Image (cartoon, rainbow, N blue to C red; front, top):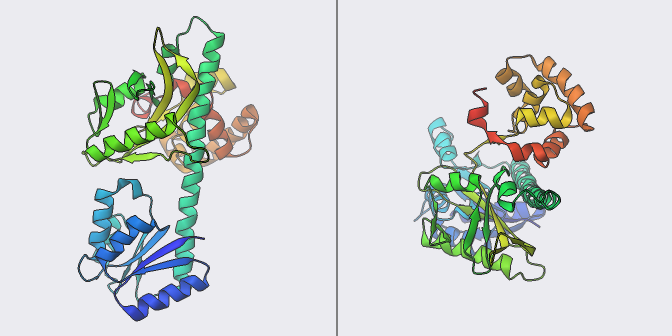
Length: 358
């Protein structure tokens, strides 16, 4: 059952909202001011926060601002504002702070329940997507190494350098013993992550400790406990990195006395890659136009956006998709994208900025 935290200083309104939400099937916790509410967010880890803006002490907008600044690991926590002000400037300011929605008093309980359900559903979809992405990264990584074992002339480094993900390998002392080209490019930005004497560190001491804790959890796993991905902020203000890790049970021999026991994958939301069109043509028998359509779809573009980018009509895109589905034995765009991103073409990915110039 989802836990909703209601931060509202008006007792009657707070009590009414809490009662209504409980009747709708939610667990509810209450806070009467911003400072208490902020502490409750950290201690209770609610699934969604419903917060008045005009709170005594720490205002609601300051609660959100502080949360986004100090706790990037909670960046996916849905945050809904309650306010008596319906002017455009107030609503715009709320959204600019990162609020997920903005509800004007008096609150329509039926509408509120619908909005909450929608936001929680979005978070659930993101969690499923995140888990699928982690599985894809692991499968791609292990599949590539399996193929390498059949091609003895390829070194592990050769294989890892061709992966589209940023990959760092660690020994049992949690020291970095290998980084692939994508990871090297990411670290060269010096925007939140760096290597110091073989140790991966964050800009803040707290981030460095969280990275080491993740690696420790992977290298010394506890039954039934899966290490959670990390969100690592960047001083530039650009979107945070996401870090995931997995244990290499059999180890990976990288040379004399050099065995990798853990792999860490870094995702940069600001860095878009897409599969090589040439690889798509070779693997699936696509025409050049079909390959470009598929490559653009893997970037998350809609059919309309693909049509605009390639200067063709939506009908033309749909016509090509019929052929693409036949060639890949798929029936939906999501299935098609998942197939391509888990295959060899994704390992020949190129930066989207470069691909756009072609």
